Image (cartoon, rainbow, N blue to C red; front, side, top):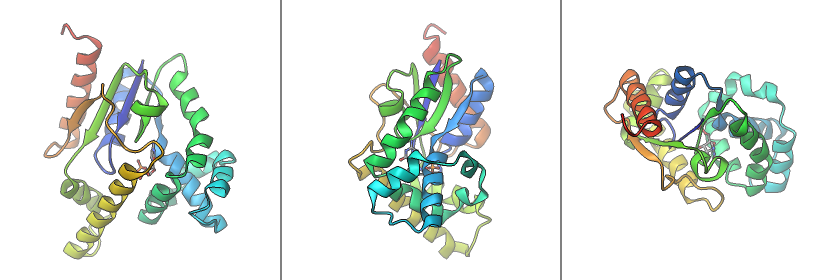
Length: 210
Ligand code: C5P
């Protein structure tokens, strides 16, 4: 069983994907972490974020220890990740690993932007998780410890909107809901309610008679 969970930044897709993996006993891959790790490596090496060939080579040689680096979760790495991920060379370098993860006999849960459209288009269950930009910004701002008051919140929202636009408008594997995905809007839902709704949707898709 492969469950594909896609959606924009701070929509709740990571929390939902982790919870589904636990609930159904499946391994989980946060594919955003792969792009963040390439971005972190590129920033450390001083690579030009417009140089797709150099970034593709860095992605092909990615050190998996970077996936546990706390710097991965910072706003500047997120921003760099959305630039790095627009290059087809980078996406190609990470494709085989993600497809192999999705193809393991146990099944898997993967979350990202293009899981249902590119990485695992045959996945029997696809969720597209979203929420209003205002609510996503507020969640991310709270996670960061509410820096800078209302001005800080506006800055986080601008960053999220810019990242959304870049992820949606790029030519290579843009953020898009797969035709057969189920939309889950988490606006106004707390974590528990969003996870419960996701579990119900997965069970409903697997057992349409229930
Ligand atoms: O999900 P997360 O916010 O960690 O992703 C960071 C960035 O990596 C995204 O803004 C997006 O540009 C990129 N990404 C992607 N494809 C994926 C996962 C993430 O392009 N499957």
